[in-house]
Amino acid sequence: MAMHGTTILAVRRGGITALGGDGQVTVGNSVMKAKAVKIRRLQGGNVLAGFAGSVADALTLFDRFEAKLREHPSLRRAAVELAKDWRSDRYLRHLQAMLIAADADSLLLVSGTGEVLEPDAVLPPALDGQAAVAAGTAAETALAVGSGGNFAVAAARALLRHSQLSAMEIVRESLGVAAELCIYTNGNLTVEQVGG
Image (cartoon, rainbow, N blue to C red):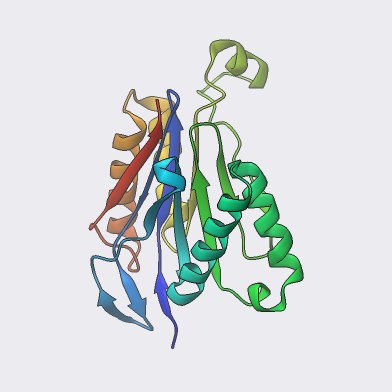
């Protein structure tokens, strides 16, 4: 059986991106480790990356991504180059992991199908896209992967809309909600931030 690591959440607010993850590693239906660290600082601390999926595959993905960052210092360019490799490299195509990466300017998901996705802005109630841009709120967003990802991103989106909490506080609160609901997510959190 493969070892799996689960919930990773990123929130961008006020020019700061916080990225957090729980510490649970599961094999089948057993918890094998409770305090794993699934968040890493890369490129001298300027880039944050977190994974969900098979642990061995995710570590391979981290190594490949870090190599792409050395080749292409731009986060966006490195993510696109990794996605190209992922689609064309037979070994990479079999990796069962997803990666969220963030720097001061970008928040991206690199998926197991070789896609690079940027999340939509989370808009306050009653604001359309143009009004949100005019109000300066379009940069607020949330993105999550892993088995508890939907719980975490739902909580984060609600907190972005209805609170003044910081990105770091929203990540902690939202991962706490996911830990209450998802059996593959625990409350041992690692949270880092970039930007600001």
